[in-house]
Amino acid sequence: TEQFLAGRARQAYQPVYSDPESYDQTIEYDISDLEPQVAVPFRVDNVRAGSELAGLPVDQVFIGTCTNGRLEDLEAAARI
Image (cartoon, rainbow, N blue to C red; front, top):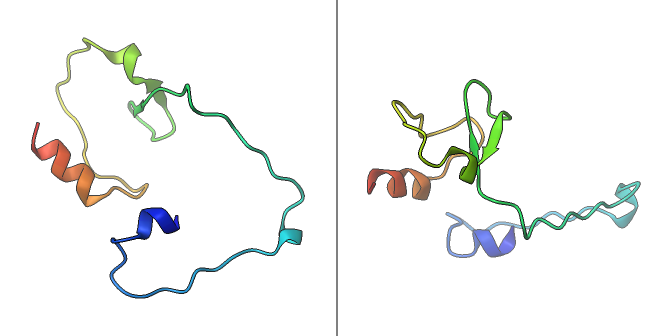
């Protein structure tokens, strides 16, 4: 998170860290083989691997989201 915010934060901030005792357990996932995911109708959690959708005609898209869309994402889409 700190690395992501470097150069993006609009003002100084004080990071908040949790206490080690705050968690019952920590689970780590290896997502190095995870393909980019695409949400398909009609829910944001209804996702498919991008490769599954290759060649599928697209009639309409929604760019922007209730799940934290970024300006950079909108700019990238506008360049397509």
